[in-house]
Image (cartoon, rainbow over all chains, first blue to last red; front, side, top):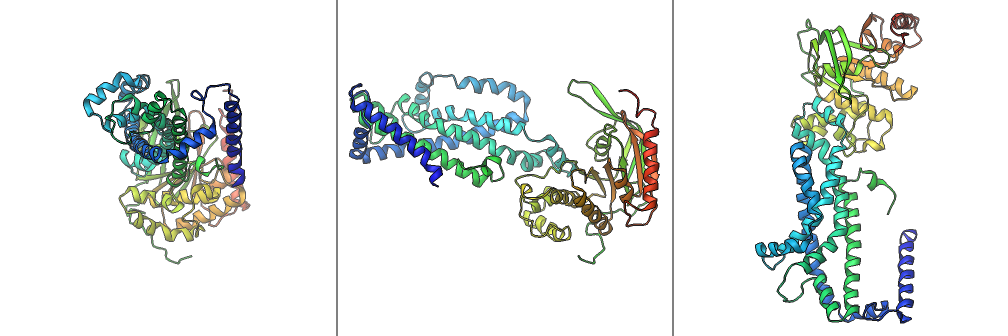
Length: 258
Length: 265
């Protein structure tokens, strides 16, 4: 336990100490780089505000990842079964990752208004891609002899998929989901700040950060960013735990602790 | 060990024993290689396997043994010639157990595919685990089993497919000598209890003679029958029996006598 938590803890403490020394030396203006103690202070003073905004962002990330997993997995399976679809869809999926969100944001708002839906769409757009790629690769890596064996047991194509390919693809899809989760948090920031919202109550940590930065409340912006930081790490490890339950046979699940 | 000797599966042996279980006539077969060329693995192969017999196919690598089993199982169609076979189940060279299923679920996979519920399938496979010396390992994943155990689970999966013909591709190849002996004697017992037609491929001439009613010796590139060796010795046989040794000498002579064996490739 100690061996596991001590190295990251020491690293964080060392980085924070260096940061504190640098900020206190006055080398950078405190509006540009607040000291860690000022950020912690801002965090404690605004706990309610920050947590209610975190709840909004967490909900967006949660739903966004769920939809991205579904869309990504279904697309990957379709691509796996149809070489034609693969040729047609794969380049578009790659290209979709290069589209700057502000280009499509007005359209999303035009379609779905100022609520959660356009934000979800942005997160899904950013997050489905790693899931598609890892799942397609995992499906392609399934031992063809395994499928052949199921055929000698009179399995239909669907049964061969259900018994051999689907479970084999699960660890791949989950690795994609872990990559997706790590970028989902920044995707949520892009979604919140890139689409219009009526300012009523908490609107997410992304908007909070932007408005704090423009009103020179830099320590609070940093406190909000620290929350996003911690949230992304928590999500990543929760998914790793989930993977151990969902795919306990995979080498990653059986491997050394991370 | 139960004393019950009746086959538990209705499909085990069909009454019409006059028809051979496997009948291959002048079969030419092969596969496409990666560069798009065609590799002829078998050419002009003719053999019959009567129902209820255990027959071995022996030959050096490259003699199309695996291709022959795939033909029997209907995974491959011959380029010319004909092959007729009763429904056959394949036990591949690698066990190909599904890593996410328990040993019990792997063994009963064919029953699941045939539409049984998970519980039904498990209940059918369960009693056979103790008989195969796998008692207590029902819930183990393949990665937790020894090579010999995995092989037995794979055999059980083939057996539970309920097909009259079993095609075993080097079933004992990956095992150490002691485990090998154990599994062989276990196979003989299992077949006494569940009579099937068995075609098994091996590169071990002795093993073929110890287990089979007839040994087919194939020549490589392309595979064809070099000799056929009936083995009418009483069972159980041992590798050291004089008759087994004599037959082995005959088999090896047949292999060496092939004019193409020593030809430059």
